[in-house]
Length: 458
Image (cartoon, rainbow, N blue to C red; front, side):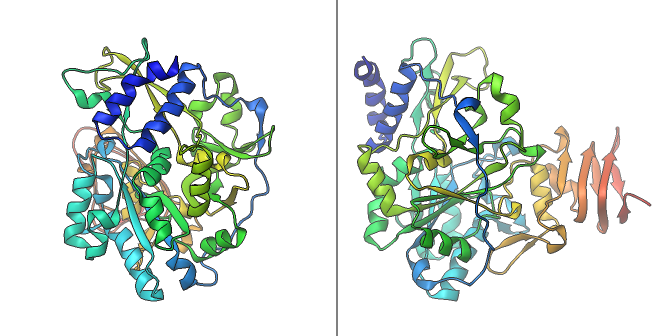
């Protein structure tokens, strides 16, 4: 039954040049869909993860031998469309003339210069981000960090599924809409199917640190690398404490049946368990989407699974044209990178400070990052000012400031002592504005220029 039903997908993916490892990973999920597996993880089957180890970051300095066996992988497949961009998100500027991508490259170059170790960098690009990324690197990075064959790991694409027939979805007017990203769980078939996993192992690589390119808090840390190497664990996830803002984010738990750690996303939570899912005291740990891999153990695990890492399937219901809610209903099958924690015997998780999780998802996040609440080091590191004690300012911008272009007129106030900043309407900050504590600014009608000074006024 399933092989016959899957044949049109297999043919479509082969014609599009999708690698065999990715086809088999999609087959695994499609067969689960045909069996009507929900992918749900009920509250009664799990228990809270507790008493995770914490590590003093930065301790000890880098071991050059370990670094020489390490590859840094940045997930770089996202466009900044939600922020009004039509290019790769990592080309956003953090400081004038300095992008996320510049800082990522600077981090690798600085490590090489400081230790003499040839730590490697791979960028997991998508078809939408590859050209922008490589074009930028050609002008802004050393040659071995700019050439496609040296730095690019290409993300796969997956067919959308007609929700009624479970056949490949079609969109004759826009065939590109028949495809979707497979989720960052595609890391594993991409590494294997591209040949990069074998290439890295043959070159002496043993450890991989993987994180999002828009999370500049996630830098290669000597203490974490040493701890991971000493643990002999095949997989390590970085988690941090959940806050009320993370109630809808994936959390770590432990399966009762076998004691293994697992990741539960909100899409895998039944409605009746949503209250427990959002209980940040019960489920205390939030997945930062930064993981560590033993590449040799990954190779072994893939071999055991016939080339497939059996990640839990996430089922998303959409329309084939996301801008047209009347278009054909489809199912998009995705997997989460962090969900691999349950696929490895002996996988571990460590608690890290919130400062290692500073992704830029909104223009409010970007404004905070551009402010003096964060410092940018010569080595490409980005860190919260020590006075903030690991707590970033919360910046809330209205719809008028949804897109990046709106920040140019807004200006950048001092936020090093800010708790919460809320802006509505055409507000503009003059140079020298300092926010302390919590402040709200609202402009109704004409623009409002906030003059230099400390706010809120005492």
